Amino acid sequence: MFILDLNLRLAHLLQPHLNDISLALVATCLVVYGDKVNGFLKRLVSSWVFIARVMAFILMCTFGYGLLALWSQPLVYWGITRVDFVYRPVLLLACFCFLGILAERKRHL
Image (cartoon, rainbow, N blue to C red; front, top):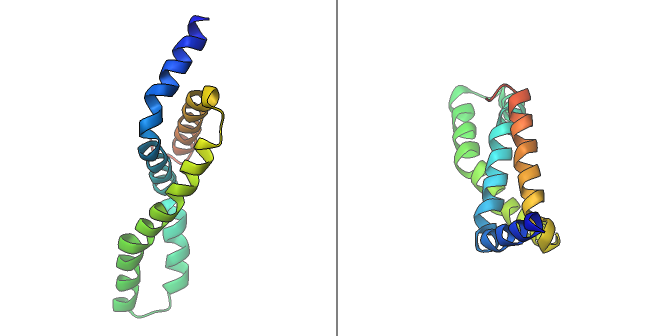
């Protein structure tokens, strides 16, 4: 009973911060998989002239990652809010642990 009560209190504490938590999940995913996105961009623009490659990289880093975060954060928020209130703390803990494991496997930690 104590664990269930603690879980419900944690769910109530997390509720006002779900926007920030979903943004943190998206940002973490972008950090973990940013090398894949940069590798794809590198292959795409490798035949371009130097100035165009630099501009493409700058645009991708400034606008591309920003737009990915901006557009995917509401989707992650929507997914979190669809989970039953009681299971949200466990889901969020599991998501961050999973992302931590992925980061460790990609040698980011």
